[in-house]
Image 1 (cartoon, rainbow over the protein chains, first blue to last red):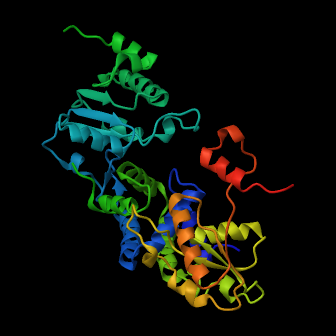
Image 2 (cartoon, rainbow over the protein chains, first blue to last red; image 1 turned 120 degrees about the horizontal axis):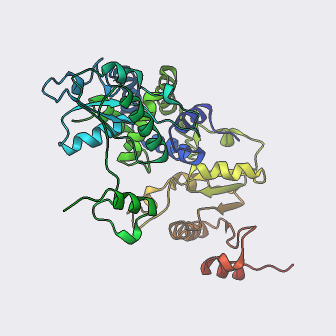
Image 3 (tube, chains in turn yellow, green; image 1 turned 90 degrees about the vertical axis):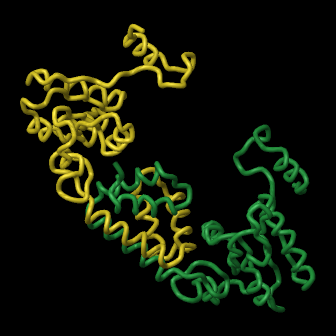
Length: 197
Length: 197
């Protein structure tokens, strides 16, 4: 006995989502069964609205509801600094700080040998189009992973060729952590990056 | 800076799904961004189709596309045995065996003090309406958890009152497992349920 066709179809759809396998998708489908009609309608419409309205900003690549994101439109922000991040999530993480007031550029990924992603696959040409004499600093804030570091180094070289000052966010022990629980590389980076107090 | 409204809305929708928190929902929303328009359309329609077409069988409570499920409609099946399970998932699990050819009854849950669910909250009245002189056996196949066992015992008592022979699926060591990895209760049940070979 098989599942009804539209049950199977919904399970297949849930399986498209990241981290969701067969069992998880089935569990979700059963849950949809217990949701009321309005909730399902709302969910269905949210998907379409999202896909219709959310685009990538044509300047920086961040997500937005128009053609250009709020940050790029905001002329009160510091127009001399660009912070390069891997994904729109990172923009929100930085913005939560309320400490950085410059612009952003979202690469949409990193160079990765494993995934066969090269510099060509990243949103990087539009970054170089943005660079002009006004730009005083490019902060490279890709993740401190192997792929993030590779991308950062590569990007730093390209920027050096154009004489654009590039900086990299610091590595070290996270606040509240313990030395004896830190991995060796983090501890090493923490030691290398020591500062006078 | 906040997420765009329709991003937030989709995140809220994903959070309605079981086991999905804020981070997971955001990850899913970002994934939807990378899906093409047709896939999102398909997903959206699958939700509505599912909710519109899938109902609970009015006889046994199993999921089906019409009013009565395929199993209840199938007159070639053994009409003298009813297997009582907790959820439609369990019906599919049993059907995979291709060994059981009787009918089913889906309780949609178990009695649970923790969740404040009593026998009244289960699909149990319709089970007793189905019981007649033709029924030779009711197999109680709720899960071997505390809640499943409680429900099984309670159900067995109700069936005994009506002189309906009830059986309970066996507990013991799963095939391929090791004695020294088994929990005590499973081993005890396995010992109690020993058979002559």
